[in-house]
Image (tube, rainbow, N blue to C red; front, top):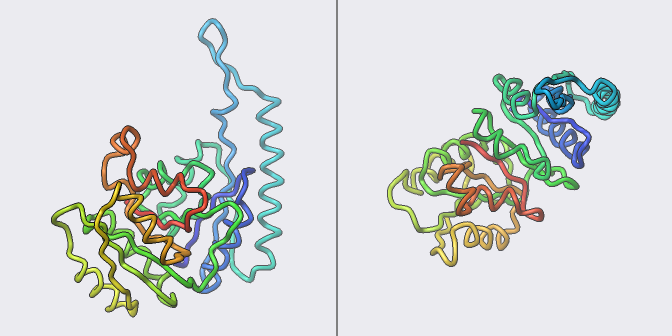
Length: 260
């Protein structure tokens, strides 16, 4: 992972995002791109006759605030020892990040920002989802991989390899509920070929897949959970719940690496 894209906004968690992106890039002699977005669409109002107009004063104030964000990010990265640039955009955040991520190896966002789910479906680039107050410490101590044999899980596993290389402990965890897909032995063999020796744990589903997996991840004291995003449709997860939605909504959970 040598090209890291990080979302920088005025919401909590910005410092943790930038610090994590810099740490990953430093270890790979890579580059960090900081995206500071000021979505113009948020400052367009409708009049009673159906017309629209820009809230110019509010937009100008937002641009000034985001100038400060950009300057703060530059100061934070200036002493990090990594190459970086700061880019500006005026699209909505998911569109802006997905466009900028086309030639990135990883996108770093915060769980509380509410962007990770939409971004995982919009972008082909893996998404690292952090807690607001906790950067990801490298090398990672404990990591878990959620494995159901599906394409999304396989994509996430492949994307996670650079983060797993020096990990102290890696567990491949399956919750038994779904037939077919790639067997766990193939996933373990793939990891071993890349120098990652993982243990395999199989758990019988109790209550729900997400709660069963959450218990296994908590018992492993995982710092990172690697998982495919939205193996079921987004609408089905919205209506009935699902693994992705559960872990994105779990404030105290581990850092996530998502891929779809």
